[in-house]
Image (cartoon, rainbow, N blue to C red; front, side, top):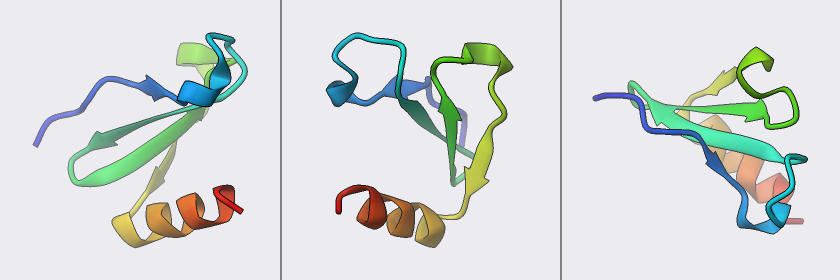
Length: 58
């Protein structure tokens, strides 16, 4: 498994004020798009990512 490119939320409206996500080695990573490559990266297991998405959708 490789690392996918960063994807920004479609709700960011082209702005650089959102989170970006990607998959890597079977895990999910998120970062702050405002900080770009300098952003800390949070790596989550699949179950944690599903929980994150469930909360974000509320």
